[in-house]
Length: 163
Image (cartoon, rainbow, N blue to C red; front, side, top):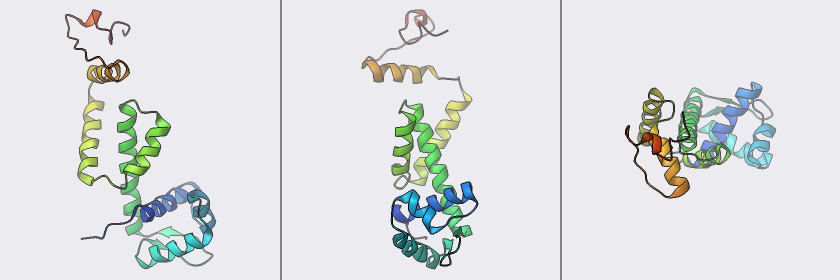
């Protein structure tokens, strides 16, 4: 069984992965800038991550992720995207959804993320915007629960203005 990583450790791995994707490599100053911490704190964490087998790090050199670190980074990226997409589907502002996904990704279980992924896939295979999601948005905005069916659809406040 692998030991659980702290959210701080996961943040470092995630930032290193992101910087490498955009620049091709990561340096202490890049990581320091993104995380808003001092270079000495970054160096200390990189030494720990190197010792634990998540990064390749040499003083003053570029930082790379090991296969073990890459696996963690990809898992975090998938969790983040799933959570963000789910929150946006619920009508959460994209910026807020992104910030919340960053926080939630460190505590949510793999089982929950798998279930959310299947839910998102299920919704994507159906209508462009499922009626029940429109109904939820209406309920959120008004506090009124409504039921529309084929007979009452034209009078339904959710669907009356949609073609």
